[in-house]
Length: 163
Image (tube, rainbow, N blue to C red):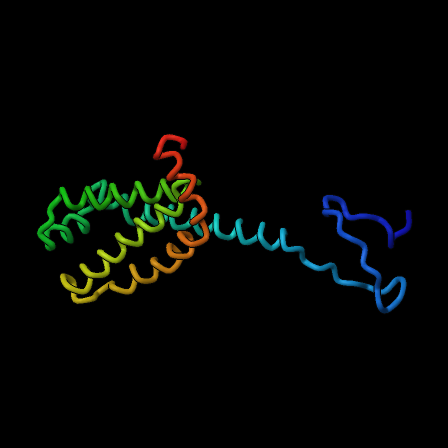
């Protein structure tokens, strides 16, 4: 087999295209739509994993193990430890649900709602000290909710008992 006809190991077969420059001319292989979709799904999945790690480790964990800074912040709000543990549990549940295929869209919507609340609290109780953080987090959550919206019908079927 010659160099020009040898296939690359692991490469997906593609349709042969005639080169307008003649035989032997280098032709760039077009990126197929399925390859783009696969990369987009992988990027979205990576984003979901990063957000899940953020919510579980950086946001929920300090509340659930009662780090002094979290206790102080919730005491300042007047919510006490019950409020702190509740918010931490909601964040942890959202982080886990971001990784469960049938729950991904709903989890992103729920975490977005939690971030709207966090934004309002940051503005009203903490003079907007970290108000940008919840707004920044809403953007990728909205993307996930929209991209995984087809799972909502499946979730609804499961909730209704498989109708």
